[in-house]
Image (cartoon, rainbow, N blue to C red; front, side):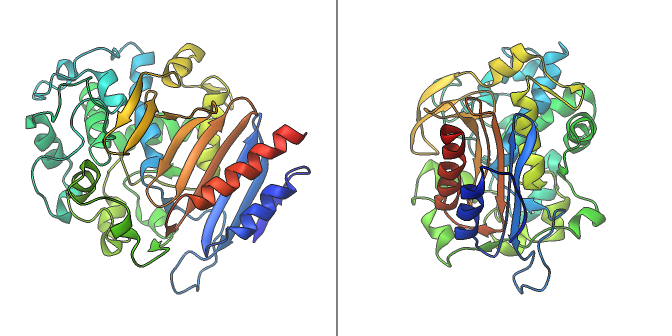
Length: 358
């Protein structure tokens, strides 16, 4: 284990060491200042390449708030309204859903409607065309079901239609650049060289993540490959733009992202959102059963709100990014070892205890 732990955060360092899994990193900001920056393990399954501060990891749904922020930038600029019908900006789109309903996972489109193989991940227009012609599973606004794989194409195509820019380019130029965030979609060759290889924490992990016949199982199964190591460790996946689930990032970038939101939408002198729109983003817009997650969930605009006042987003396999406004913490945890959330829970307990005792 290497890195930095500020005085008073020793318990967090101990918790991170206890949760070591052979490839992970944790970064915590407090009131905009780094207080924890730790890493351990290797970038590859063969354990020949040490993890370093530039290692990138596919963090699955941790990337959803990033593409949500891209749309909120357009709201900030007056180019999109939260209650605009998506079809106002994307005329071929048949579902009568609003931008707000897409952002809150209530548009009724949790699955891609046409069976596709893994090659479809590299065909943006094909998958967006499938979504445009789809019929919602429920009337928009009536049911929440996390749009596990569809979320990024729904919002990313909205960005593309309004700005004329590829969503990966828009995120790079309008979010990652101004806020100095080492993350992105559609990686170039240099960034791919920095990627960690994903592997399962247990051989049966994919079979334990969804119940047969459930919305969850249907949502993550099509197009094929989102939980197939041969796919997600491939160059084709890393160069594809799948904003719902293939943000490649460092923990420091995730933590900085939340630090900017905690600061009212401004970081390093670059304002992306007004404080009012950050407040709207992190307010409750839906509370109830989420049919993908399987339990009661409160959704903001791209983030999940917890009963303890924290908000953020976890990713399949145990990655997470979140903000704790009461304690001033912005946190990113990323791992290449896909498993459950026990590691995140242990780290959250340790991080939360620091503020309470200081």
